[in-house]
Length: 326
Image (tube, rainbow, N blue to C red; front, side):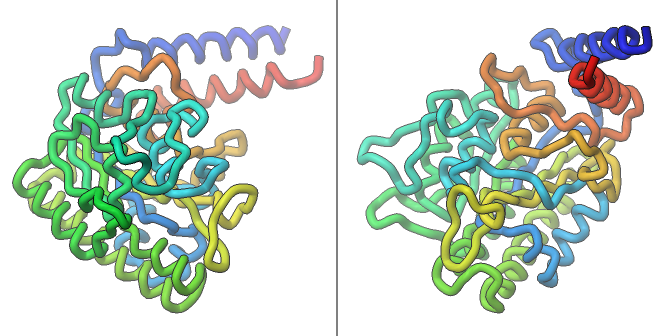
């Protein structure tokens, strides 16, 4: 009887979640959140973030939810992993498996990006990235700053990208914005992951993150902006790639109005954060309808709202009940 009750509770939780994330949802689950900013620090291994002097990144996870055991794609390389981050599906589905500027004729993902979904839902969009390969993600974006796609592959310095992001926020205030800093990855390939030089690069990236956060505050948007800080992969030696946990584990930090504070998401045993969850969580919070094919999940447990937490907990308990031996 107890097992039947647990199963019934699980089914109710699933129904509630589906209703909350369905196309019929008409309100944002956290009304204060009206915009989103995703910052990716290319190649940022979680333990190195914690070792370095990174007051801005530390401030984000002290004021939000975090996991330093989140996972990127199995490929663990820049463009395929970022595409999964911004489409909510694996590389096998979105089709971006190359990690350079690609063919002479621009190739885009086979599925809609966060920017395309956001525009369809009425949001303005912005993209700033330090590597020219990110042009593959720029389809339909309102404001774009990416290096020119002219061989060989071009790269902006992190400081230049920060300046572009600050200007874009001041002049346009995109409602869904993505900012990429690539310096940590560049130093990793040149000198090595975990080297003093890379620690210095991480600290420089932290300063750039601080400038972008300062621009949000300067426009008085901090009380309406959901922020995710994450990465596309880690690394070891001068390399990153598949089948190595030092490359696959990434930080995932979420902060904003209505988001729980100083919460380590590894306290939830059944919860594993994947890079595709960045897309799904952003769509959920902004009431952007999810495409039919989405591998990512909304990480509802980050919300302070008790009813949203109950939906997450009920579904999790139901999954335990279903997997328990009869």
